[in-house]
Length: 354
Image 1: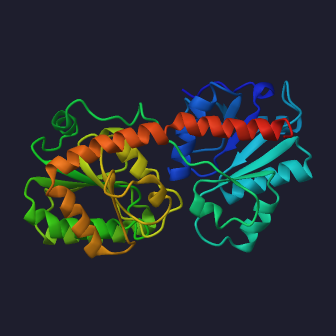
Image 2: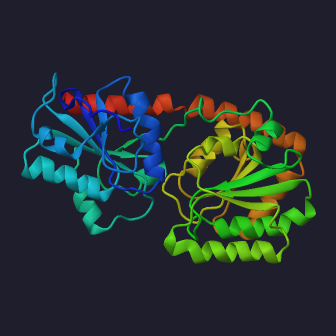
Image 3: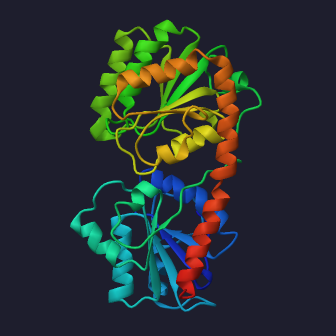
């Protein structure tokens, strides 16, 4: 049953989400909003979000033309171009009392349309120092945090594996996210095809969805695995909303992306006490302590991925220490509460004209 609509008069921050499919941005909103709602009147707007989040209905949108209780403006926090555009239309055409804030995770030069929209924002947030370098307007860096209560180590990794129908006697290495070339899923699969015959105590898990245009890519990967005789040890388990459960059986995580905006999966893994081998894309170099919580490797370098993963697979004691380091690193430097606090400061400054 859908939740009752929120009282718009008490909403000081609107978080639009105009994409139905699960994405990194959607995941960020799902994790942040429940915590933000404890501190400020906040509501989402749009499809693709669970019903437990406070949500405006489309029929309530005209109410955005009125001021909320206790403030002269609301914050409209966009994370995509269509959401920025909607905010500009509401503020500049319909004269809605809004302050527009945009979070950018992109690490490439923006197209002219995106630049046009960004210049019309009242505040811009970058999710990493790398992202900030591509912005041509003043911005504030606020790195993503992770819910360290949701993503936590299991009491027993073997039992965590058994609960998911995995072999509890195996070590598991994972690669989670959309199944596509950009995400480097093929590099992970090829690395596992090279490594697993040499390491019979290890199995691999690919978790994530291949959208329609990438079904052929996924089919090719499955065919490679079948040809290698590893279909029982390289498992494609699909997309899961309870993805935190799939991190718990892991002993190693690989983030093989060729390109990434920010990339939450290394943080999710480290919070679960799983060391990470990651390509140097997105914010990964700002998340991982090389040789302490994992290993950074060049992008699109299969040989480097195989070598780095094998070093960890052969060093059980080192893997255990890196697991402890990873959990401590995520908990102390990347808690989601820290991100909520920084966003709250930005919202307050926008609302009160600071």
